[in-house]
Image 1 (cartoon, rainbow, N blue to C red):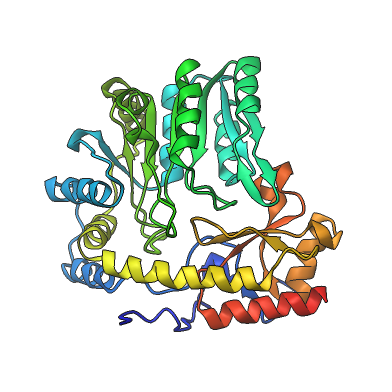
Image 2: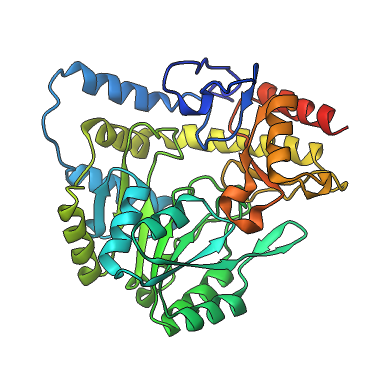
Length: 386
């Protein structure tokens, strides 16, 4: 029996809503680019925030034992990842965390590797912190993306790589890495003494039969070189209520990251972030499980719409609510493709080239919206490409 209404269309046309910002020359646009959902968050969040707001006093607040217990319980229950209380460093947002970790654990001009195509702020945060960006392209076999382990190891050796910034589950290609893949990846990192910075913000958004495996849960030795960045914000549509956690088992590494956070006055999360995190990790599981069933049906709708017919092809994502559309069969440049989708089809997608040169000819589509909206967007695209 369904308890939550994911079919409801919520009006987001308010000032400052990035996803729904107007585009000059484009009217009646369906925005499917920014990675947040068009669904109301879990009711327990609204209740917790309203209760917090009614207090009327918003003084300094730190996370308490209950907060840490709830984070630990969530990752133990859903991922068999046993976390120590002291491992948890609260932080406003995952990208804030990643920037701090890079500064704390590498030096200027050190090489940091990413697997492209990948979430574009990865390259930005590496370059802006004066580290050398090293790219290993994922292997694309008929829409199924895998790590090229030979190229990975070659790039490490050639560039004296110190750390790897990893995306698990992967944005934008939708892979949920198998345990065997992660073990191979981790072995290479161990052999070359690399720091692993693992962005696992999409870990809750995984479809049966796939299962997310936190890298730090593979073994004690892997945990000792891994920094895991997690948050409830992607899962429960809380992007504007900043709240995340850095999980660091290694005492020495945690001390270095904590010092860097202090240098940047980046300590803790706000009172609403704390309230929301406690709420979802206490009462949000039923909402999430129903959301995943709804998004699973969205995957089916997309898969039926875009078979591999030479125009647009989509390999079904194993995780996230992001579809990676291969549009190379249309024979358009990235700009032509973007403009055709936006100005002619009336659907705003994210340019694939933003995620790296290997994303040229692709587009990322966010399908976390009511099915009626998704179907309308698909029909608009199909009408346009003929």
